[in-house]
Image 1 (cartoon, rainbow, N blue to C red):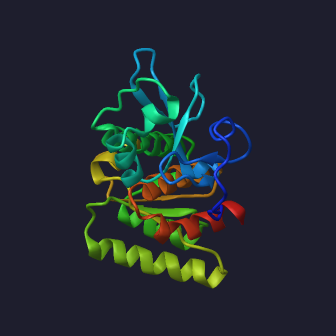
Image 2 (tube, rainbow, N blue to C red; image 1 turned 45 degrees about the vertical axis):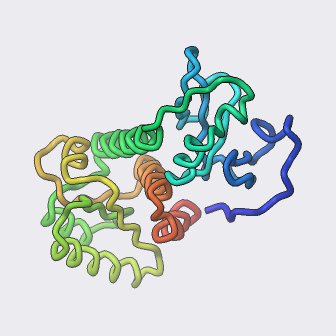
Length: 226
């Protein structure tokens, strides 16, 4: 992942949309856009998240952290940055979380349709033994014993190869089941491929937003760079 760097505050005209980095409107740090969430105003003056960073209009960038979005809403950062009336819904932090979850689930669904996903404890265990696995997935509400057995095997295999072992637990069992299109998906695995990389990126963003990025970001970055 890109290392955060503290900069001198840029000028007002340069702080929003120019250059390879963007200014967090809350912390005043310049960061890689991947570490931020862009917000824009809807035609009726409502603040909406722009997760793909493609919506028209001047953007306000906030660090990808729920607590920072909460602070932005509470301190009216959006109106101050845009210098116009901007209504930020009180449930904006929850809306952002839900949208990222939707993207994670949608990417997992695409990976499954591309043949990159296997689901079920036994199938995941067998897959670990016979082929390369890009990530092991668990429902957030999965039992600890099943998780531990798969994690130990996965970490041992990856450790013997000198490569990271990304373990993702950002979706519930119900959310994983919906994405993969079968009942009660508690455990799953992804084999290598572009959609698996995309899933890891989206999962890392959700982890970062929920405050867990320090535990998983390093493994994810090694997968992307290696």
